[in-house]
Length: 223
Image (cartoon, rainbow, N blue to C red; front, top):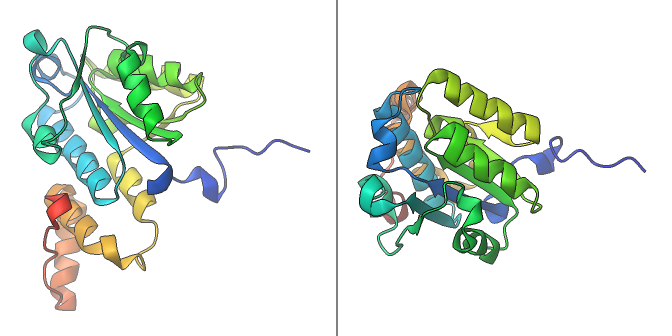
């Protein structure tokens, strides 16, 4: 019998109940060296991603590297998870810190979604490492960035060659929602896109206006 390709078919799409999100090193020192993307765009994308995870009940793990020198994790992320103290590491590769590995394993989820600064190091190292532990790894490229466009591109290329799946934030949220008939999350996801979705968010707000529908109110879990 031929083996099933894990990257095709309905099961290849993300679901909230199979997903765990790991956000790595979105802190001041890393943003200071960011040259592949506009820093504000990365903040917007990773905030959007984290809000989506909270809306859909996806476990989210925060991690920093040498926080006392590199800075705390950015406020938009910490404010979303005020009860969580980020795992502060000395290892450049987050997957070499047993606390990170154990926190992910404790969720019981096997679709590991990662975003981090920088792409070619703090994202690529744990992404390719976690593959060997049986995770399907998804790298969110617009919520990540590197010290140059080439460094970002080479990091993504390296991950793809190893079997990591590259996606953008909107793709992750779209796969989690999947069906507009899942009405309980529609107001929350509409608010996220209106606040962080750029031109699509503006178009969505216009559609609500034309339909005479009230603007989506933020839910307590998607603020």
